Image (cartoon, rainbow over all chains, first blue to last red):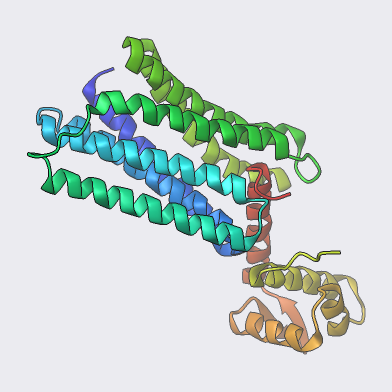
Length: 223
Length: 92
């Protein structure tokens, strides 16, 4: 894949993720269920992670800047998936527990991003961060766990009572594609497979597009 | 039995939907019946109705209350979002 195609893929993903942020925030505004706030926050983190990856590709020639963006991307992406997974976990829990844990995860994400930025700005000469490619695999495994949980939750909890059975498969499929994207990047990190790399980008774009389509389909299904 | 607490947006949706149904189907529309079906005490129902009139979702026409285009759009949008959340596995 050429650098231009990769950058375009990242910025298209950002736009798609931001559209999802708008839809999920709208859903939160209508329902005022605190646990639903995790979705717009999670997809905002994901949108930032795609921007950071795009920026790291734009500044490919400057290794230090490019690596900093890659670090930011790793952190924001994992927090994004964590927020989405926690949203599903707390969808059946009490409002109080949700507020408490949403507070904790928000605090943790804020602190870790600030600490990391601090480390990048203040400490580079004295403190060496581990190689981003090594840590990348650990973050990816964590992402696979978060997405795996979402898929299991969806398969377990989707009930065909109010919605047509055929429309119930799209959300698990969309999250499975996101899982496939992470898995393919993990494979690509291990053996450098170009096919896995292309599959990852295609799967991610397909997944985000599918999530947006679910919103439009939900309106059409009623009509 | 634990009763699910409704948010105010859900209450507006219920009131608009029931009011529209009452005005269209009944010869003698009754606000008390709408309040009862919406499961709201009458004073809270009146407050809710006043708010809906104030924001233009309900209006008075020939002495009768009617759900406006804006109110019907709100009902449709609420249904769409509820459907969306169900499909996303976030609403049972």
